[in-house]
Amino acid sequence: MVKRSPADADPIGGEYAVVPLRLSWAALSLLFFLLTLPAKSLLQLQPWRPEKIWMWPLVPPLVIAGLSILGLVAGLLGLKLSGSRGLAKAGVLLNGVVLGCVVLVALGMMAILR
Image (cartoon, rainbow, N blue to C red; front, side, top):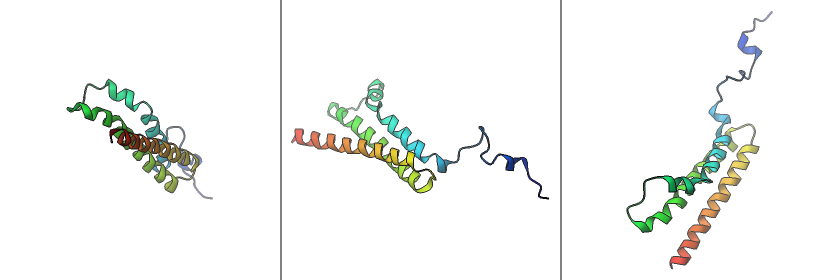
């Protein structure tokens, strides 16, 4: 007869189990996407402003692009490391769309300023 420990009874670990980082990359990707949505409004609430007035329109797209790139990296890691890839695919798609929109905004700004 094989002795079993109490840990073998619940392989998941219950509701208080530590979530391994390997499984949370996809959720982190979606979290970065959700942070990009109110980024401009949150930046306007900050007391910090760039010293040069012409730099203020550049700050929100750069912050949004940075968050989107971090979300894209987390989503790609989730695709590689996670067992369930549906959430990671959604995170990669959403962050890719946001990054594409930021590129279109940058191209539009360059066309206007030309």
